[in-house]
Image 1 (cartoon, rainbow over the protein chains, first blue to last red):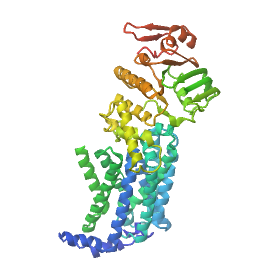
Image 2: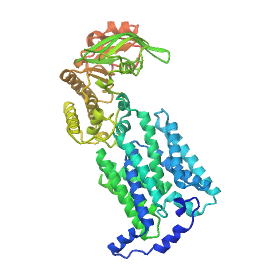
Image 3: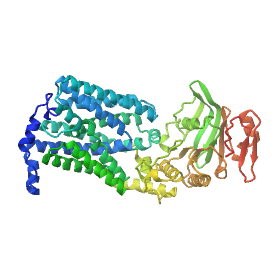
Image 4: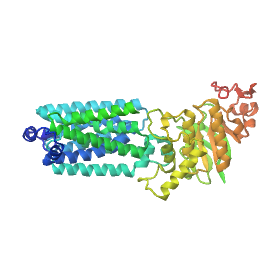
Length: 297
Length: 264
């Protein structure tokens, strides 16, 4: 399972780690809490999860507002392609994630073009997604991949994260959030009211392209924790929940981040003390929060 | 200062002349409706004033500058905008975007931010939307949304308001209500208003003058003079009748465009 993170060749270290450190719950909160932070791999997982959750919470809020969840989904599928291509080529998977998500964002922007017809855009977006998924599957087949590799590429893992990978995640997240922070008001304007924004001198098209690139980066980050197929658990569900709960922009972003952090931390803890994958926990917790918000709202 | 002055203006899109020989003057504090059949070039006129549609001939001055150079003093409300239920942003946020939505960086709390919030409250009160400005925009009615959009266009104290079919989706009482509001803003804030409309009847009592775009050109004048059999016949080049219905509505009969813009 470590393979999806650190090197081209998945090994069984992940599985071995699990069996050697897995002690189960003692049901003593202090002992259990301390156990969570004892091992470096878990410290790295929590750090990476925190970084990813903050970025996904912020970028996801704008993505849901801009109704680009379909673009986000397509990018997450290309993330799988990038990671499997990198495995096949024997380069770090991280490069595959960021490279292909950047390229995917540009392809989506080109597909969207100047058209304003949403259905045309969706068809083009969907076509790109289908091609990406097929290519990814081809790469995995060519690689004679151990199923472990495919599993964690698609559904996520938290094992085998190194401190240098945490650093890369941090740098990308800080850069992405800074860009969105600087562009926050024009981006909000262009997202909800593009015609008036354009007349007011806001570079609407440029912002759209820039946002897709940042979205590509966040998808690449998020898919490393949740896997390519469960990116929505951190990128969409907390943001959608936050927008159900409040129409205030700032409060919405804060809520979105808080929810993403909560489900990531709890998900990681649950995965640590059990034998089930982290992606499952994060997705289920996000969905539960969304369901509660829907009932309340 | 004259808000809009076009002289002998001509607009062409893809080699086709939309209108020519258009000479109009709109002063500050005037409320002018832009009327005419579909496709006659009403929106093109608005775009020309914004500098988005270059003139093929003639001259234009907008707030004393060439078109496009004074857009920061123009409040613009484009055609057919409505927000569906899933738009989770408050009316007050939308109005605020009209004030400083084009600024980069995050708003820093302080006197400037407080002044901005005060101005937003002020324009929302001016359009009478205080009661519902805190609700998500998508949950509001068409008339309520339109009032907030007008507030958004007013946020930066423009000297010229360009409203492209703001009454389109509203029922008759709401059309008259918004027209009364626009007229009051005109007078109180000394703003020139160009309002593109489909049907002159609900608003005719509030107007200072009318620009009628048809037959490849446009004429300007007092509402009763322009919406008359004589003027419209000359404009369309065929005999046109303007009838007054028993309830006082004007009905244009015989115009080449069969959609009957004044016959709703």
